[in-house]
Length: 272
Image 1 (cartoon, rainbow, N blue to C red):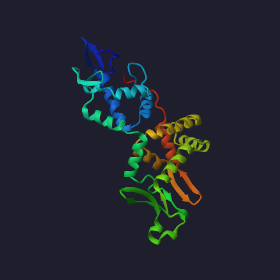
Image 2: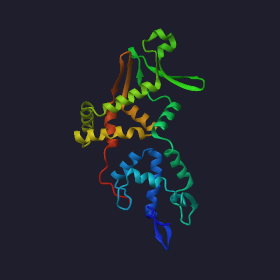
Image 3: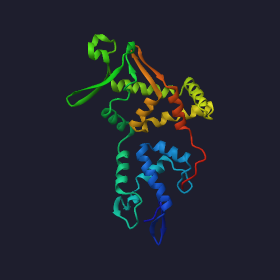
Image 4: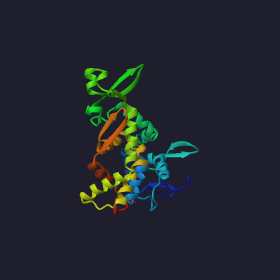
């Protein structure tokens, strides 16, 4: 049909034939996109691991084109219409459909939907004045779900038992996430993380720690909600709610672990 030769195939006698080494990389990329749910994060990981497309790094535009190319499920497209091709598919229909389901929903929308289904982002972390723990709760009105965090003694003793009896879950969760993303860029947290990393024997400079922590902010909205929740539980020791606002205490060991997870990999061998 003309056009550039798709990665994963070679051309012989005007037919597409599978290049198995490249095809294995294509399958790996599809599978990792489903697991990560983030084009930005996947492109970053592929670059760090030296994985290329015929010697060229894969950017987000190239990644999306690959993930949307029906050639990989054995289709040939002509004038916008997909036909069964004569070539062998690289991706099966089930894997293709999973990728479509991820790509068709924006990361922000997916995050909101998932949090509504699993309303426990701050479970075990959030406390009211006086150190009273707050627990997730919800009500339904006219078919709509309203989520809250409620102070435990208010449940037992009534609203007068605590000046902050109940707070909207989405509001406080978003405020905590915004503060957390901001804190990771502050010099105080960078130095604290660097000292913890150094104490664990890791060889990272203070500048490398700052750059590593700074990677999280632009990636955050593309992470699966489950991964966002994991990072919150990893980094946050406790969240204290008062009539004056919200205070967050961070876990030093969690900061060091996150820095290690985000640290660029070195010396990995290219797979393509």
